[in-house]
Each structure stands twice: as C-alpha cells, then as structure tokens.
Length: 248
Image (cartoon, rainbow, N blue to C red; front, side, top):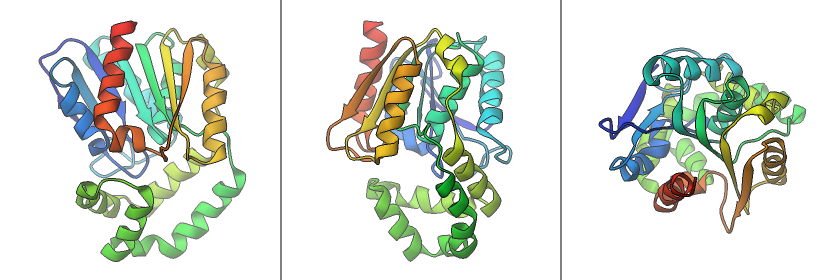
C-alpha cells in the first residue's frame, strides 16, 4: 500500500482516507497541521494515482487497510477519518472491525444508493473519459469541485493517471454503497459531518449514518459544499480532530 506520512515520531496514529478521484493531498494541509502531535497516515486508495493495486470494491479496500493497520500499528489506531469514498471506506472498516479505532470522523459519505447514477456512469465515462487529459476540460471539472486553485496541478496530474476502468469501478461502488448493519456494533465515538449546501441524498445519508452508529454526533456545516471541510478549511478540520481527541 502506498501512502504519505506526517509526524512519524509520534505514537498516536490518525488515518485519513481521501475522496474518490483525489489522493493523499486531500489531507496535505491537515496532515501538516496535526504533525506536531500525531502520526498522520494518508493511504492512497485502490485504483487511484500511485496506488499499489486496482480498485475492486469498497469492502476489499477496507479489508486491505485493516490488514495494514494490523501489520503496522498493532491492530488499532487513535482515529480514522474519510471524505466521500474515503468516508464510505471508514464505515466499512468500522463494520468489519468494531474496535479498530477510538474515534471516527466521517465527512460527506453517501449511503443512499442510486441505481440511476450507477446506470449513467459507464455511458458518461465512455464518451468523455478521453477529455480528462485536456487541461481545459480538467479545469472545468476542477472548478465544479470548489477546491483551492493551488491544488489544480495535483488534481490534473493524478486524474490523468487514473485508468478508465478504475474510475468507473470506484464511481459505481460509490453510487451503490449501503451501510452495513454490523457498523452499529463498533465501539468508536463517531462524528458525522455534511455540508449545508450538499445534495439532499448526502444530507439524508448523514442522518442515516448518525442513526446507525450507536455513539455518534451529526453536524451540518453552514454554507459548505461537498468536501469543503477537509479540503478548504484545514485549520478548522485539524482543530476539530484535536477537540474530538481532547474531549474524548
């Protein structure tokens, strides 16, 4: 598994899983801000640029991260967080291993399956995937994501490196993911975040996740769109992580 690390000298480990189509740089600023107190581990999800294997399923990606935590960190870490696809993988990790972390931070994870979205993914990428390598097209896509301009070169480089088959695979998995009943057994204190300006399905998903996790809190972030919390507000995100750990 390929990854980036910050604060390797610290004992307490935080794992953050990036969104679909992005990479470890999703959490670059957050990792740097937390590095003075925590060992921040940023895996590259399966099927993404510089990953070690193709994407097969959310379940398999979760199992691989669990195996890595077992091998590298003795089977448990302080906190696991994730955005979007990464948030779905966090939920899957919690459903597969109930005691893998003390805290979980889930941002904008979709758990309301959409068969319509699923059905449209292959036709859409069949017709436009080749455009991704054109900077003008990537700039249009990037602008729609409302990320800082400073991240464009990272986005463009890594998006161009994702194969069509991997892109389709993780988008389809994202569209159909359902929360597992076993997630209710996890011992982690969970914190669920969703932007006020996200789609209805995402806000509904946040409520479903909050209801499914026995010990969780839900926060709707005023004025925020999808992914804005971790990507655009690194100071607030890092501060939230510190508060979560401090308050227990």
